[in-house]
Image 1 (cartoon, one colour):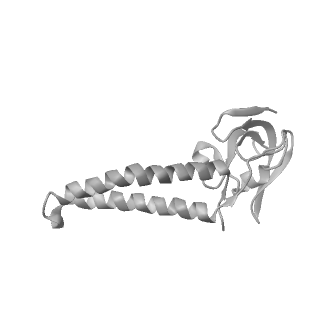
Image 2: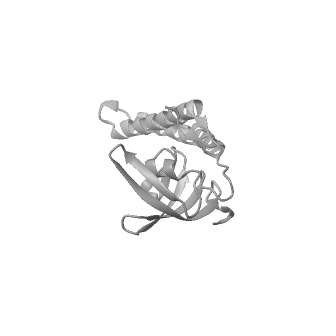
Image 3: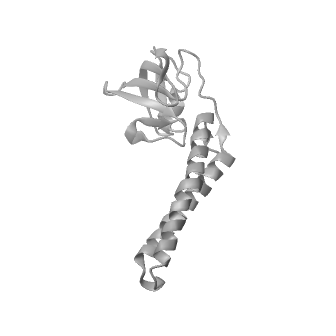
Length: 167
């Protein structure tokens, strides 16, 4: 399965890779050198901690490069009155009348605790392409689904700034 990413996601990942290669890698190598210079490596906690941080950085670089290489590029453009990627949506749950606000994002940025819902999540997938006032069935699995009503759509940019307007 390929991760769905926008061009902006790819750009951010490339910037992080560059930063990690030019800044973090240099700092990590220096920390390893300094710790190694302290002598006996068998009981040198600083050396092992510095090596662990260096390896963590290299692992993150490899992860990001692999994500970019295997990514499926998707557009964050949508019709003016429809829900699309990077739009903020307010929905009302039919079951209890509660209202929640979500931002629809790519798989890489999804974080439900912060209200960032992935396009691959049940609610994100269900909401894409719908308009204000639509009753949307969110299919969680084959045995459970629920309905939400789209109350409001805010067209926002990838950086969170408002791009168009609310509906």
